[in-house]
Structure formats: C-alpha cells, structure tokens
Image 1: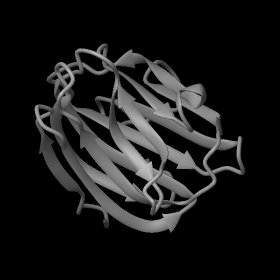
Image 2: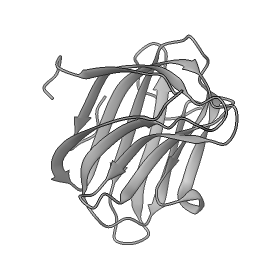
Image 3: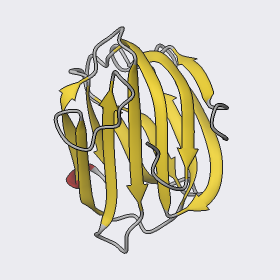
Length: 168
C-alpha cells in the first residue's frame, strides 16, 4: 500500500489467525509493521510472518520465542539468525524485515526492532544473514498466529507495509 494506508489486525493466538497480502512478484522484499504483543509463546517458537512464492512455499519467515527474541529464516533453521534482545508483552514495537533472494546460498535476510521508530542496523535488536538458499521471488506476505500449542503469541499488528525495496 501507499504510505499512510497500511493494514491493521488483532490476532488472538487462541485460534489460528492468518491474513496475507499478495504483492507484485519481487526478488527483494522490505516489510515494516508495529506489533504490541499481549502474549508470548509458552512452548516452541511460533512463526508470525511468512514470505512465500505463488505455490505457496516459504522463502523466509519470522519466528518469535518464549523469551520474546525474534528469529528470521533464510531457509530453515540452518540458515537463520536470532536477535539477542526480545520483545516484552504490552510494549509497542516497530519491526522491519528485509529479504533478497539469492542464487542458492547467498540470499540476504534481516530483522530489526525498536520502540522509538528508528530502524536498527546493529546491536541486540538487529540480526542479519547472508546464506539464504531460496531462489524464487516472493508474491505473498502472511501474518499468522497459529493456535493450539500452549500459550501462543497474540497481539495487535498495525501499520503493515510491504515494498519491493527495504523500508526505513
């Protein structure tokens, strides 16, 4: 969407909640959204963002852990990075994801978050990787909280923006 026309959603985590936006097929994706967690997962990490191709096969995903840390996948756990710092329940966060497809082992991906709207490029609220394996363009961006495993992540998501270039 154009600046100022982002999407918003309240996802409860008790049941499976999924929404997605189709985007113009792109080898580079920048995503920005605000997130105010009302619950963190009590068990295993949970996927909250998925960038997929048309099939839809996941090209990259963002997961949240019980300690609030965020992990972005370049292609499975072997190609992922996790922030040193985590999110806390009740705080509004600005979150950025950048992803670029590669040729089989050189795709790039990063995640960063802040409470003041400043996009980090280093430190405990930022992580990046450069060994992503996906070679397909992204055509869909999913936000999803899956219910049914312990206490699942929940919260409000606001001002969701997706671009074919980094945001911020």
